[in-house]
Amino acid sequence: MRVRPPQDVDHLLVETKGGERGEAAGLLEIAPLLTGDGSRVVVVLMQDAAVDAAVERRRLRHAMAAGVTVLVDGFSLRQRAVRDSDVAQGVGVVDADEVAGLLLVPGVKVVWH
Image 1 (cartoon, rainbow, N blue to C red):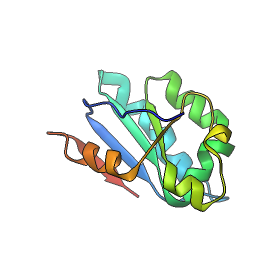
Image 2: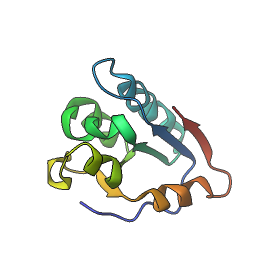
Image 3: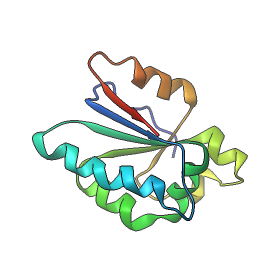
């Protein structure tokens, strides 16, 4: 589902690696820990990690249950022949320019992997 990303974010975790090694899962596991002090956390899955938005449901559900906003790059999905409708419920589909806007949020702490 296409969404507008939140305008207030404390931590932005951008994952570009995915697949069998489960590297995207690492950021999805870390993200809930960052919400413990009330921080607003957004995880964006891009490039190869975008496929994890359609495949890895358990970690996605856990992160979202902890209050993490999970987004996926629509262009990355299209490059990998994944339809927006294949993305897990609750994961928002965004464009790269919206991700760029999150990078400019004053005070945001960014991890890009």
